[in-house]
Length: 449
Image 1 (cartoon, one colour):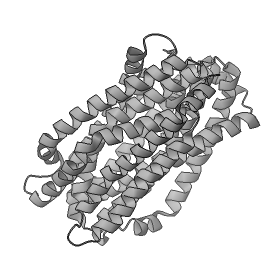
Image 2 (cartoon, rainbow, N blue to C red; image 1 turned 45 degrees about the vertical axis):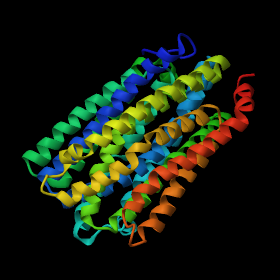
Image 3 (cartoon, helix red, strand yellow; image 1 turned 60 degrees about the horizontal axis):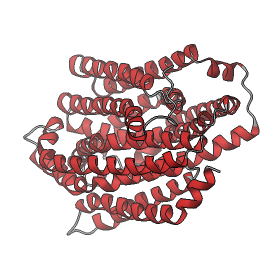
Image 4 (cartoon, helix red, strand yellow; image 1 turned 60 degrees about the vertical axis):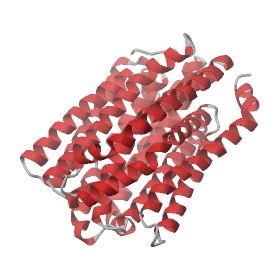
């Protein structure tokens, strides 16, 4: 199975080698998002790009619910693995799967029944309502597949295996890109073709990683064969998962609300934001996945009561993230316009200019989002997911409040939305520093007694 005990070996190389497949996996995923945006933008048009961009924000929010549940479960799995508690791990697996599966079915059902209300709530312009609706109805059917992939991926990563999730994500990405080009560029199926490509690849990766894990791992087969939901395990999984789910959901709900404000400025700004946000996400994505790997590293060492490795891990993680984010900010400043040209035709000068302005506003502050991701992962691993929720509420609450307030001022307009993003990061980081500084000894040492 390629399990990796993160409680042993040199700290910095251990974290980096574990994080690398996760980073590569997210690069593949973001690569697909870029190709998807490029195909839709070039072969269907700017209206379709605006529709898919709005749907992407919504699906990111819905996916974040399942991702949060599985990330929270992954922390519990990691702690059990670190303290070599096989019975606790099996019990946690059953409780987590039941929770994730139930939420996935519920989420898909509610989304399909509420699609018209969602479109109104998102303030979708009239000219793209129909294509947005058709696209959403199709991609909603892929929600259970997302749950499958993230559940089994979280389990494998918790055991130190970050390679197999990468393999199945790679298969999904290649298939997705191929179907995108075939259905949209060759057969002209428009946004519906892009949606079909997405859900087919999601089910391939979700069912594939599930089948592989069940075939290769005796412990998880035993967990499902003798499935018993014990109250203690269910309470523990729920505490971690629900709070992590809240953190992820609040984060993406804030982004979705900002998308609604952006939609009020018309399809040109929507298209600029759709392209810019893909570039932005691709740029800071490596540090997001590094923070997730860091969280698993900390959680395993919490279970093994390795205090020294925890403090070393924090120090190395901060240095790594600051180095990468500084470099990323520098590169993006000079490449913002060429990167916008990947998605938008050069003749669309107003759209490109707005996208560049967005990237030039938020790009210099990537150290803020990098440190925030580390805080999220750290507090989850230390058994304090509520702090991650607090930081997210501060970050996104600030962003939404300032977006509404500043964008309503005629002299500021849409640029107020762009500036609200780094301001939110900064306030959340300050809060994280205060929370960690006041509770450092109590949190770490209590968890390792």
